[in-house]
Every structure is written in structure tokens, then in C-alpha cells.
Amino acid sequence: MSHDRLGYMANQIGRFFQSQKPETAVAAIEDHLRKFWDPRMRRAIVAQLADGKVELDPLVRQAVERLDRA
Image (tube, rainbow, N blue to C red):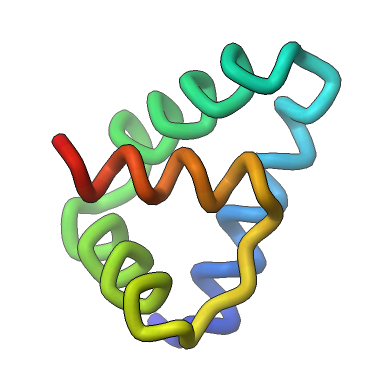
């Protein structure tokens, strides 16, 4: 899947949770990505972020960075 599409999808998830407190939103975004995204999609967005190929909203960026740590 293209980096544009993954970034768009991730940012859409982030917008859903943006009304929550930042730490709660980051945890909820990370949880959603773990539960509903295929492992290949998660690996791809982590790699795209590391390579600077995707633009993510700040809370989404934090959630994707947390995916990479676990």
C-alpha cells in the first residue's frame, strides 16, 4: 500500500481520537493500529515514518513511534 494511503488512513484514525487528552489519544491510536491493521501495514508505516516518506499528525506520529518500540 502506498505511503500516501497509509498516512491518510492513520491520520483519519487520529482525527477520531483527537478530542481525547493527548496521552489517551496516542494510546488509543496505537491500540487501534495494533488491533485492526495487518502487521505488514504496521511495519510499512513505521518504515515510511523512519524514511521520512509519510506526513503524520503529531499524535499519530507518536503512536506510530510507539509501535516501533514494542
